[in-house]
Image 1: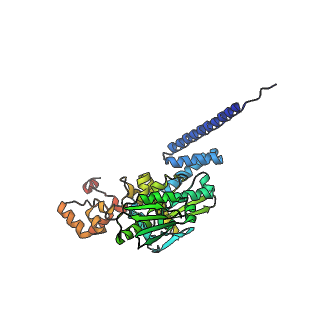
Image 2 (image 1 turned 90 degrees about the vertical axis):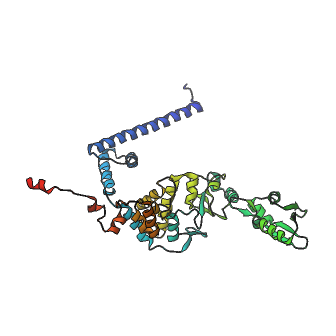
Image 3 (image 1 turned 45 degrees about the vertical axis):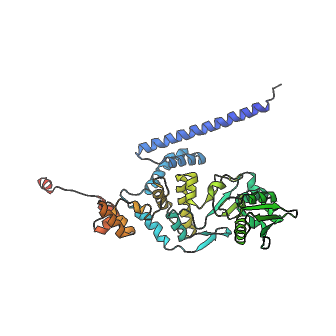
Length: 415
C-alpha cells in the first residue's frame, strides 16, 4: 500500500514547483533580453531599459517569440520618432505648449471632483501655485487611503477619521460664562463624545494643561473652570483659549469626509494637510495616500517624490480643464525645478533668477536691478541662449543658426 503524503510534504512540494516556475520565468526573461540586445547590436541601435522590459513582458504574455524581431524594429522606429532633434529648443517648445493652453484656463475655484463638500483651487491659480513652489497651497487637501480591514469596515474607517480630524473643545461641548462669579461652565455633548470616542476625563486632562486656570468635574457631568487670577479680561482670554483647545486629532486637518468608492472601499478626504503625521496613523495606507502640498511631500519622502508630485499635479490641473498637454513638457519643467535636489520656483527667486546670462535675467523681470548689479560685478554675457541673442539682434544658436561653417577661399581656387 502506497504511503500517504503528509501536509508538510505537500507544502514543500508546492514550494518547489513555484520556485521552479519563477526560475524558468526568470531564465526566459534573461534569454529574451539577450535576443533583443543582439537585434539592437545588429542594427547598431539602442533602447532604454524600461522599453526592453516592456517588450519582454508583452512577448511572454502574448506568446510573440516568433515575431520578436518585428516587435523590436517597430519599437526602435516609434522611439526614434519620439526623440527630439539635436540642438532643438526643447525649453521654448515646452514653455509654448504649457503657456498657450494656460491662457484658456479658468480663474475660478471649483469643488474637488466627486467630493462636493471640499473646495480646492483648480485652473490657472493652481498651476501658478505649482510652478511658484509655494510653501503651502491655498486649499490644502489629502486623499487618505486605508489598508486591510479599515477599507471595508465603516466603524474602523470612522475610527481612523476621528484620529485624524482635529477636534476642538467647542466642537464637542457648550460653554457658559458666569460674569458674576467669574467662572466658565463646560457642558460636554454626550452624542458628540460618543461619536468622536472621547471621554470627559480626557477633556479634563487637556483643560488642566492650560496655564492659569483650574478645572473640576461636577456631579452633574459638567466641568467648572476657575481662574488663578480672577478678572473680566482674564475670563474672556481663558474662554477663547478653551474654545480653540485641541482635544484630539492632527494639527492642520480641519475637516474629514468618508466616502465609499467603487473597487476601493472607504476613502477619507480631508480639508487641510499634514502629510507626515497622517502617515503615522494606524490603518492609513502610506503607499497610496496623497496630498496636494508639494513641499510637504519633499520634506517627508524626498526630491524624487516631489518631482513626481509636480508632474502629477500640473498634468491633472491641465487635464481637468480639458487641455491636452504632452506629459514630457511638464516633466521638463519638473526636472528643472528639482535639478539641484531642492524644489525651486520658476520665477525670479528661483530658476529664472539664477541664469548665467545677464540679458536673459533682465528680460524676465526687474530689468534695471539686474543690469546695475551685473555692471557693478563686471559680469560677461556669452550670448549662448535664445532671449539674449534676440535682444542684441543676432541669429539664435539653434536650427540653422547652430551650425557655423568656415571656408578658406584660396584653397578652393587651387582645387
